[in-house]
Length: 203
Image 1 (tube, one colour):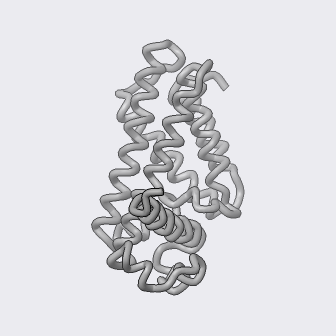
Image 2 (image 1 turned 120 degrees about the horizontal axis):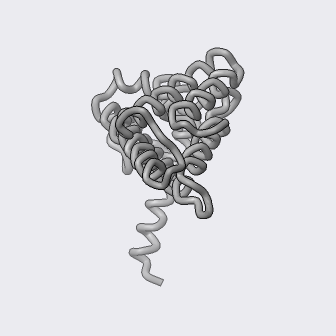
């Protein structure tokens, strides 16, 4: 066995473990409310191991967001490439998955952009940029899906696909915040109805 490769794999696993623990904690409590000691204790790693991978908590937050969006976009690509469906159906499945993952009870690390967006954008420019890059990736995928749906005839919109995609993402982001405030899913029901109307998808 190549010991160098085994060592590299171990380092990658430790780094992923710390990120996963941080993501779970911060999705529940927010960035500022989670201290470094809580991350270390929950992850069962010494402080030295944390600083081996991350130079500061802000640097950790930046990498956390990058890792989150990388996984999110990969999953989104799978949803928007589901076989045997129109693009309109795939896109509506994406919104359905959004609704299911953005629970107001416990999002289990799946709603990091909603939880941290407003908070960290004012705390750290690198974290704000990571959020901007990640959300731009989501919006561009929605725009491409709309373009494809228009070409295949499964949907129609009244504005440029990118403009519509931006509006839809903002609609669902706002709805996620309102779900947490109201502690019920009515904002998602309204967002789903509006989405169907915007892309002219029959209810």
